[in-house]
Image (cartoon, rainbow, N blue to C red):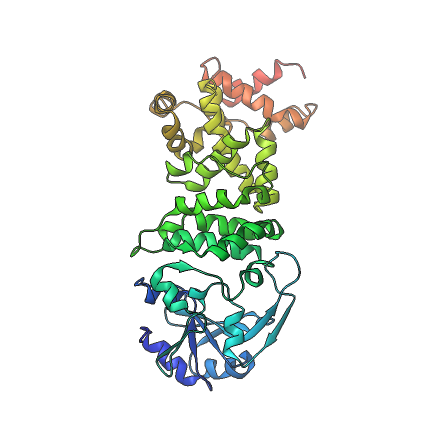
Length: 408
């Protein structure tokens, strides 16, 4: 059974002192009639044995993880990840990271540490043959996702494997074998042990899982509904097990759509506090990323609450390109109302930003040193309001005179 590989990869296999294998997604995809996928390589060769040989033959090499005996190999436009055969030992939690790794020369042991049968199919490049110890070829043809050996051993100590299971089901539109699904229900709590950034990385892949392969009819909603079935949202720090999916199905920016669905399900008393805790603590967002998402989502909800036009555009003018497409899927009438005013602002060149004013915080500080700097923003927005309403010209002297009237 022949798996198509590039000329570069064939040359690479001849450099290795022992047989070189392609394993994982690329082999699985070829068997399922899907083009592409990451090329992962494995062999009974320690990275220290091969790094210098690779460099001498024109390959670029970078150590990815010395504990895992993992390196990236590249030549031209082709990139591969190589890992020596190994055994992994996990702690009794779901953090995904092995506490101990042992090199092995036994390909069966290397296959045993992998997650699903369809991801443990090896292709021996040197001998042009398939090596399959767990009936992965049969499962690939029957479109079944099944844990290698015991589902308990595969899923008990690695929460990421459950999220990966959900993603693969959506990407390849697979059925989950009963014992595998049952154990996923029992071990979904391990997702709570994952790092915040890892949870978001997998969640983002799930939401867009239908975008990865063109040759197959993928189903991201199947994946999202599986998250609900497994009740995983509680392990994202949310006060419920299921999300009511509505916006995520309608908008192009599915992550923002999902966040709106989560908020609509949670109905928090304070949007900012809820989002800050969820995005920073559970998904690993930094302050800048949180503020960006908050401005988009608050702009969406404030429009639905019919925030006054002037106040609304003072706050969201530069972000309507993201907010309006969300709003259009919820209330086209509301979106059109704000769009009319937005076009009016542009047409007549109205000053809508504090930065449009002819003075700034430094001018206030220089001319009015007794004013507390905590008042600067309030002063500037008041001036902007007067300028916007046509009650004050946007001229430096006129603006400073107006500040002077306030007798600070």
